[in-house]
Image 1 (spheres, rainbow, N blue to C red):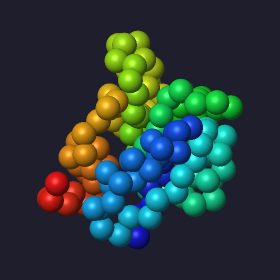
Image 2 (cartoon, rainbow, N blue to C red):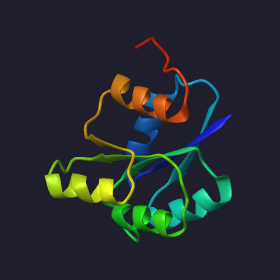
Image 3 (cartoon, one colour):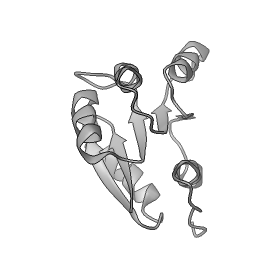
Image 4 (tube, rainbow, N blue to C red):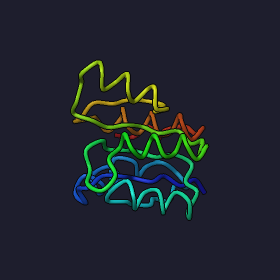
Length: 126
């Protein structure tokens, strides 16, 4: 079974993401409300992929990406952000983000991206 960690300070956003990804077979979801909590859960649960918001308290998404890189934790990370500025996108790429998607993202787009990063086929029904 694959594990995906959903990292966002909004519990509503995390639940929306999980609903969008629920059609992926054999995927378990782990939730984190900020970067500090996410780092603890990543070290404990060893997820196969992360979906990450950038703006969070305690440790933001940029800081978490930097810490994952520092610790040599190699895991695909999908960054979800409303910020479309080229400097933000470049910074995410430089820090190791696999994919940067802009909020709001559609069901098929996020599901297909996560499925591809997990090495599986996305469910076809919308």
